[in-house]
Image 1 (cartoon, protein in one colour):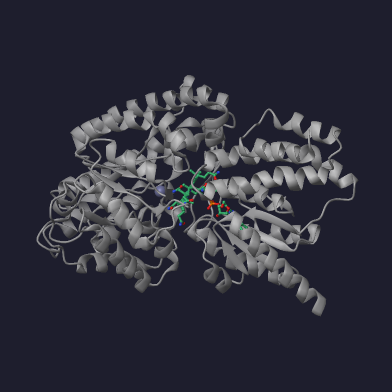
Image 2: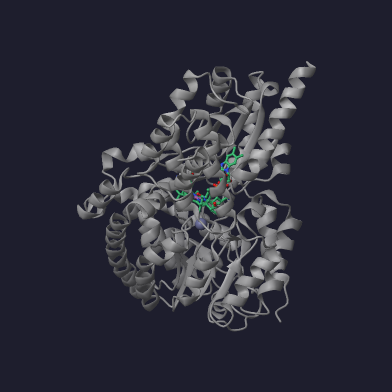
Length: 223
Length: 385
Ligand code: B12
Ligand SMILES: [Zn+2]
């Protein structure tokens, strides 16, 4: 099998929710000499991008998206240790993400995390109902570029102000960019509360993450 | 007989200034029956919001039925919306699936205005099936909040409705099989299993349906004895795709067929990003009189008026449309934003069918009072065609 063909099969497996088939497919590709980074970036992640396109076209829906995410993860589990050994592939940025305090919605985050990973972000998931102090600890521990706040209700979106304040008080605000996500968010309202941006669409949010990381790096350079 | 209800009846009966020519009840009934009313009804789902509006905290009412009922009536007496929504929270729905000693782990209270947090009752589909097969919900019913809080609160509000000679209807919410099935295990697990474990999902839904059909018998008794007329069916299935609706929609459909025979005014609650296919199903399910719907599905690039108009056309001659403003605008928007959204909804809807002004889901506790007032005023101001 040609390399291009293998990569396409990997992407296809993600898109077609092949929960059983993905592991042998990744293993075969490795055995055939494809690098873990290639398999991830041009195979599995390409599949996740197609999932996004199909979702936006209304060709597939949330249940299918979630199972595609699971397939992506199964593949990623095999590749991650290998990628670490070889010094890692290109990383666009590091992000911590969690559902904000008082909120237990997780479907959106479960979709957003693999989308961001597939786009080349190193994402650390802090879970749901995350206390503000936990974000502070995680910023110290992981030194991310981006803090992602999953805010799925109007009231918990408004809690952003509080989370930002606690990060500020810890003296960490300048080190990170903060973005909110969820169905009830609004970029202007997010900025008013001290965050940097917001998005209700994970695929669109990737562009925003890229821009925020660039801004952060520019600010770091100018210091 | 409830003292709190009697006190309110003494204070209000015969002393309320009329709003329009119809009573609140007549106005709602007319909209549901697709008849012309004097004014556009407005009936926001005030749920948690009314508790703090009336000056209580959630912790304070959690175990106090009288205060819960007091909050609902006090808020209504002040705002004079066209219906009173009973207060419900998630513990009413699922506590009777949980053994008493485990309940504290499942529910977490936060701030005075915050929603109750809860943890799922089962982690796997097999566990979930087992919960139903072992009839956990019957074993743990006694002493659960369904019995200690929900039912007595509902009966008090219905007593108020009847003693006030039905000038204002009380809306009682009943969750559908899909809603129960999803809530017990978490939606994201449930929808995954619709793809990976369709047979087990069917078994699980059948069990949820059986329990819900039995629950309807209980509500039928309430209707006979206490005058339950207006029922909101809280649908689950809000993140399903068309395939799931086709394969698993049957459980809710069977449930609806029974519910509409028991109560005269049944409407469906479908919040979130609504799939066009789901709206079409709701037009086919006979007997539902109105639909409280929400935002368009992600892939539909429609403006608010376009979305409202497309739904109104679909509903023409069949359903009353209930919407606007969104819960988001009710909370973050200005009163002017709220007014605009209500106007856009009514302008798009009234040429095709009747309307009730209310957001697609419950009004968030943090929504400013001015926004709720703006919603009511704007509805009252709208001349009917
Ligand atoms: C499923 C659901 C539930 C499930 C949640 C299961 C779970 N584990 O997640 C259950 C039934 C448990 C639930 C509970 C409640 N819910 Co709910 N729920 C929904 C519903 C219908 C769908 C959410 C969903 O999964 N969408 C699909 C995902 C993929 O979309 P998404 O979340 O928008 O995520 C996308 C983007 O936003 C983005 N994204 C997501 N996260 C992030 C993070 C970052 C950093 C970025 C950049 C992007 C990003 O990527 C995703 C893909 O594009 C929504 C309606 C809606 N409009 O979404 C209501 C909704 C969120 N719920 C609501 C409410 C009120 C509640 C309850 C309070 C109900 C109650 N009375 O108990 C409780 C909450 C309890 C609590 N304290 O948290 C309201 C909130 C109202 C408001 N505006 O405040 C909503 C909006 C319904 C409505 N009214 O329209 N709910
Ligand atoms: Zn809702």
